Image (cartoon, rainbow, N blue to C red; front, side, top):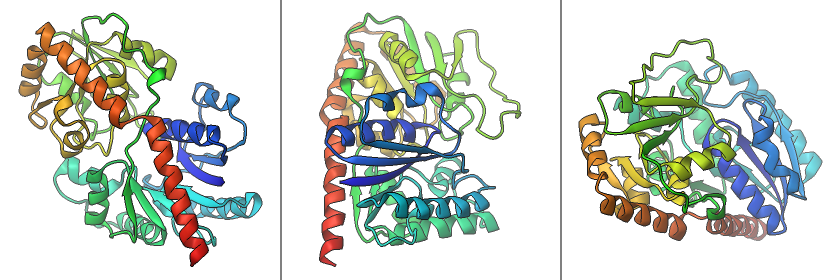
Length: 365
């Protein structure tokens, strides 16, 4: 099967794409991959070198959630129309909503990785104001969802959010994201520090929670401090003496940091899935998580939860893990849950089934 997949190079969607595309190619499929946003750095595309049957087309078109993206959306849609005619795929897999209604007589799925309205509601407690840009954004999302033969989300929570804020798709499926366990090292001796990974500028990630009060232990934070396209904007993140800002890291570097960390703190108040906690769990870290519904759905009793957005309760949970026996128990719980439910192999097999289903439906129609 020949699958055209779109992605972006900002955040976890690119990591998800790496796992999915690698698995599909190994399973014998041909992939045309198109990326939007910034051009990837060399370390972001190193994984492609060993993959046959992969045709990669990087672009710099802005992403649909950016407020000045209208012209880029129009031009990128035209680009994709021409590309579809050129490569003649069997199925279209869109990681953006705005391409879901692309004029092409082909089966297509749209993956709801995240969206602006559910992000805003999680961060601010209400939906965003109905500005002209927001109306256009909602229209793009609704049209894309309505035109999709199937809509996939990485959690039930995210799928419910799409239905609540936009429209109910004609067919919907939850496919949990996955990572390859062999890429991580759960057996390395642990050091006495706490790790968190995320876009520091993103209010949904809520990394600033780690700085609201003194927390027990050394804290290391990995991630971009500034939003793409706003690199000149000053940040207001003032690190405490026990907090180290490590900046962004390549996957190879991050693997070693995960392996050394004893505890991973997931501070997100908005997280449709969260690949970083999964990577930490596969590295043998105990998980301490902000008590939001997506984390509860995914991790159940395999994590310790602190009261939503409460730095004092976070400090209490971290103190509890000073007990070596409890720490070891939660390390094992998280690792087992990750291996049981969130592997790349399982994810790829489920996407293959979706592709087969939408192609079969299209042939019957």
